[in-house]
Length: 125
Image 1 (cartoon, one colour):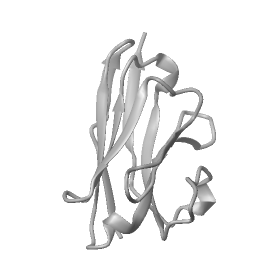
Image 2 (cartoon, rainbow, N blue to C red):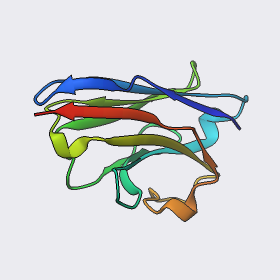
Image 3 (cartoon, helix red, strand yellow):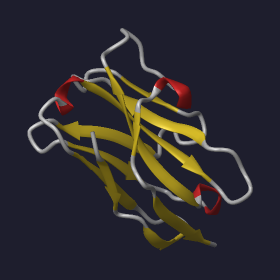
């Protein structure tokens, strides 16, 4: 599985961005997908995740109400809509794929099997 994240950039505080993550392979619809981020000098952290069906989602407390994860299985793509961005959202954002559903939304890095290369989001104050 290859994952290609895109959509990052520079935005002012209060603005919006939509990240995309395109996946290769014909079994994308069977993967749970997640977004993580790593700010300068910090460890990578969970942001949001979505089940293979799109029915279940999970968000970090820091982004609840501002970010929305969604997926289009016909396009092999997962999205992260980010609104009301804050300077503390500045980070490299990574998408990840978890092969095989576990019946719950995974939020830990080690649970994910494949990772994209990351896309940089910079929020200016």
